[in-house]
Image (tube, rainbow, N blue to C red; front, side):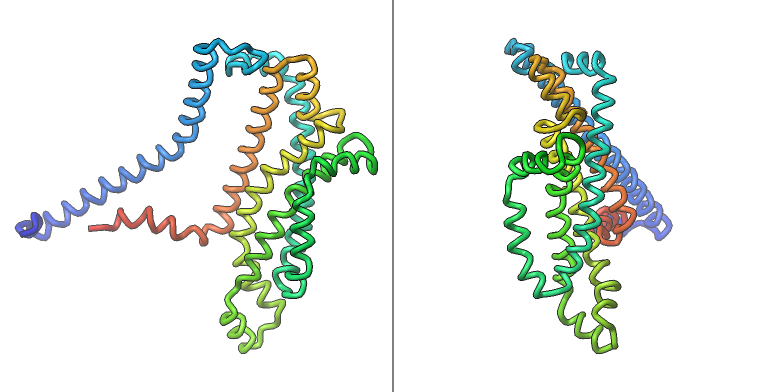
Length: 290
């Protein structure tokens, strides 16, 4: 006999309410842990790094400890801030161009079978070219400065956006297309009302990838041909064997990348939250069980 079989309806309701309250409290604790877990892992990684450097007596010019990197960041805070701002602006400009052209080309390729099969090999070949080999050509064309970094950030973040948007639109079910055509919908109506909403989760997933690799493109170009930026600062620091400052530049870049990724994730959650309803249902199901 189940343990609740001998309870009155009132006591059963109270027991169920207590179970629901306990599940809600457990879910809240889990959400708090999920928010804290990344920070705990990051802090733990830095702690292991610090202890490992001191335990094995690694020289600072080989692998500086996080404490040495922090001291370098405090010492050179203004050059780091100034050059980080340059890198951030360069990356955002290239990333914005990648969004505009990538979204437009992705819609065109996903909407047309001919364009899909015709342009896809060209895009794959273009993406296979190492972008570091393109930077010297850009320097010849545009000179040393911001423009090569912007174009490199654009080139390296363009491909993920095109592929994901085209995939999202091209994978609309043929049956759904046929039904909409039978109801009198034009191809542009199908793309606007069905294809684009379907492609939005793919689009925002590509944004989170593209914004991180855009920083790679900017810094890659800045290390080759620039007079300002985190990449340029890291090259100057490495020429003086100031390895803590080099690592400080890497950490600043990682912080900017994580911040932009978080911003893209927030926009994705607010814009395409309907696409994540499966995960939300998994979190809500235990609360309604029993």
